[in-house]
Structures are given as structure tokens and as C-alpha cells.
Image 1: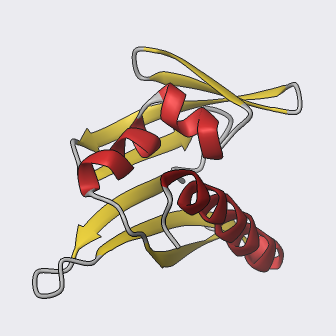
Image 2: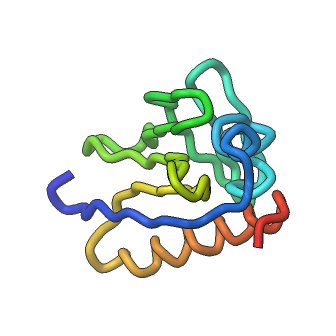
Length: 127
């Protein structure tokens, strides 16, 4: 984890936490916006992009709140987490992304998440 930098992004999503969580924690939901296809066996999730497969393990999850994955190929303690936060006053729903990237790949990693979440917003009808 020494050479990777932790970064966080926040996106306001017009959705209920329950609906949003289905897109973050289920293979069918993730395959609609995050990867071309997603399969799972228990806590192991296989993400497929353009025929290439990456395997991640679901480390933690709390229904309607967050899900945390770690790539099996990463042996440095890094993970990526998608957390749903509801503002107590306005009831606005935000998606907080926590991820890690090499210093020189930070901007690219941020842009990738922004594109992915843009797809997610389009699918669930959030502007």
C-alpha cells in the first residue's frame, strides 16, 4: 500500500439507498454499469471487461450502506469501497467511492470512476 495513494470521490445520486445498493452489491446490478459482466460465487466476484477477467473478494457489506471489495491480484492491502450516505437534513443520497491508485495514475482513476458513475446515474434515472 506504500506506493498507492488513497482517494475519495463523492457523487450525488437521486435514488433510494435500497435501489442504489442493488447496483453496488449484486452481480446483475454491477454488470449494468461497472463491468461488461459480473459473476459471483459467495464472496468471490468475477468482473469481465472486453473479455479480460479480474477477480475481487467482497470484504465487507452492510445492506443499503456500503460494500468493500479487494482485487485478488492486489497483495498490498488496497481495496475499493462504495458507500451510500444519506444527508440527515436534506435526505440527499450520495455515493462515496474510496479507491487506491499509483500517484501517476490518480487522475486516470478518478476519471474512470466519474465515467462509471455517470453510466450508473443514467441507468437509474438520476441526473
